[in-house]
Length: 342
Image (cartoon, rainbow, N blue to C red; front, side, top):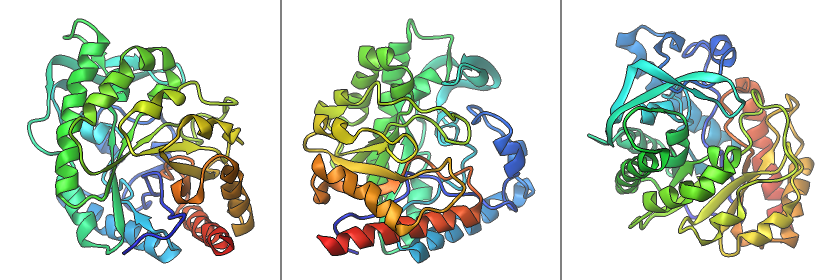
């Protein structure tokens, strides 16, 4: 389906059903970096079928809400990053290491014990499933090489930069395979570029550029302040964002709703499509279409409507499903309201 002006989309994740995953246990911990199979409710022999069913529901919920760009909801993942990171060679997930989360708390993480390699595609089957179950534009997400290098204990490489570059090679191969499998947009999640801007400048941006090398399909990068359910305090602005201006990525995803971000920062990203977070995931109340529309209009002084994709601030993973559904409807209705004014 052709996209309208101001096409709407989730950043990536949708609320997983209670019958699929133990949401209370999921919310009572930091996002898992190693596998957390104990979170899944179905028996192992029924899990894949249950995840397929829940993914169909997530796709349909986005369509019913009126979103223009549909994701698979990241339904099969325990977190945005561990699904991919633990599928790579060169990491020991059975004997994990430890690394500090962006909140400063220690968390079990993959322990790098050898060269990081992608022995086979990780999410291609997910992309094909998504493509087969909707006629709308589809987006799928992968964790970024810099973020994965920060979410690992390096017991092999001489430094974190070397690890990040091998992660980049794995992500690069995955992105190309995802586009070939039917993904219209592949989004790279790099929240740790905001959390650790000095290291991001030192080598993270080079790793992101390497992950995008030779990619011909549409790409996005998501930079955020963290899940609203976990990171409650928001800074006044981004510590790493203008650096993306010369990156070959097509779209940059930022959050503006919860933080009330000064959108003058958008002037630093000429030529980029802005995935504009206009849904506050810290607020259990569902925004009205008028509120969403006002948040979209705030960007017009800095970027033209044809370069804006109204979206959620971050993933909806921790929201109750009813809240997530309401916020998606508000997103679609708010964007439609502004679209009618153009």
